[in-house]
Image (tube, rainbow, N blue to C red; front, side, top):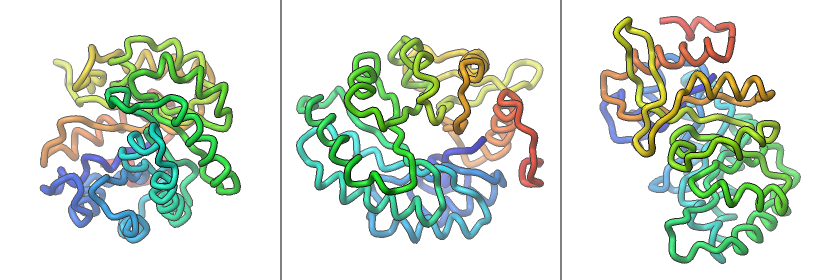
Length: 266
């Protein structure tokens, strides 16, 4: 059970890409496992130094999230540009002993999106990194209903990341549930709400109709899911550390995880 670093600089009063505030936000949250989100605005040459700053807080970084610009680089004829960025992601994963790198593969809103280029680029990148230990996990962005069968056939080395918000936009969970053995991670991308009894409620998305997060998580585990469960909280304010911790504890309960670190407790 881990938390995306995406909003954590915010709880320390900074902009999302301020590394000093991000480190402070991680310390304020006090959760022992995070997914390190790398940003488009960061110079790739600094990824490792940023990882080292995060690791110095004592957290584990099981997964690295590549910058979202990969969705533009991989779906057009620019494999060298994508490789230059992903080389740095691999270096960061090595530094953190991360087991997986999550990346975006496509953006179907782009007029120059090319399925053939996407497949060819992913095949070329597999050859480039086939001896690297991190697992490559493509996030199921909107359009996955059409693209996952293609990628599964042409790029069998890939694993997939389920994202609750993007699934709500796509409107069909079946292609994801059917591929549970190849799902390496679930992103619970959600606002953190509370019911009248003060219990955590997750599933309200920024886009789409949202979803019943507990039902989806239980179904994923029933289908044999054994990967990472990652909270990507939306709408986080500078006072949000407590709410994020409650949401993480709620998800840990769904996953039937036994807390094994003092940092799991307020």
